[in-house]
Image 1 (tube, rainbow, N blue to C red):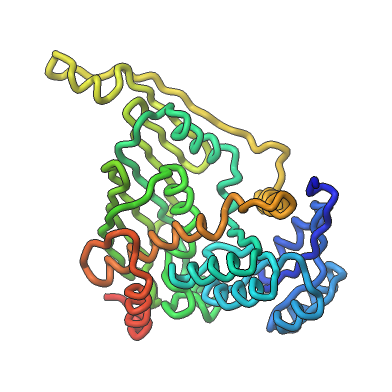
Image 2 (cartoon, rainbow, N blue to C red):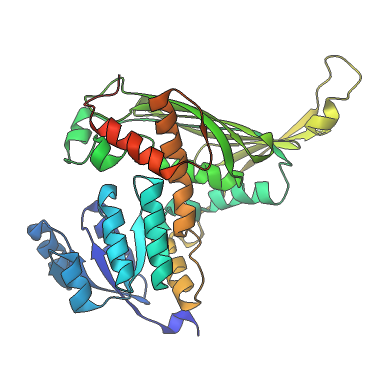
Length: 371
């Protein structure tokens, strides 16, 4: 059966900026029918319901029981995701949850298990994977253009004001945000980074601190990692930088790629790096040819709309969403590992111990500030 003949009823839980974006993109999708919104802020819920001509609730359980949607979109602060997703899954409802899916791998595992037990689909919104240029970058690794990956670098350094952190009670606290730049601003780029690399991490050493804000969580983080195949990687993120710096590097045996969030620059090496190491002249280097790749977005559709279309397609064809719960968990595990290493001062080996991280998070929550 083609999903184009289906129409799915959707309830949106949380109608902040992102929840309203979900409602907006559904207007462009014939197969998605928003039927209700939920928010404990009744005025926000009523206003959204009025605008989109749907019903409103202040309790998501009440909405699920009364409306029986096919899908709920969870657009809440991420410390609330686990309980809501698990409750929806147990009720037999498919779930599309915003990034990050949870604040810890243990919570992510509970969400994945609940969806699997009930036989429902769990998708995570990482809309940057939908970008044409990001897909092209992933393809350069998968098709062997870069050759065997040897090292990688991710920099995402941006700025947030103290007023930003004060704009919502849950921001800047370990208990409710689960981290700072890593889990909130930087998670999209961490997800892209590990997705492009396509290998499992093996060991990580990280450092976190709070240098420029009156908050509990980190506003700067650095990590060195080793992935499968001895590939090395470095990550640095912050909310203390202006102007914003966003840069990925991927060094393969055959070529180097640099991604600046808009385009890809490739330097091809002839001969390859390993072959060049055998050149007879002491200062000999491979010849390099540069290429710049820019991929225009097809049709100019909002990235969230593309996420929805893929999720609906996974329902119609009974397959896992491209960004499943298992996929969404991967970047959470890296975030948790950096925080754990920064807290303990010791390397972290993968897979991360979920129970040990919960203990670390509880200890961090008792502190007012990282020093």
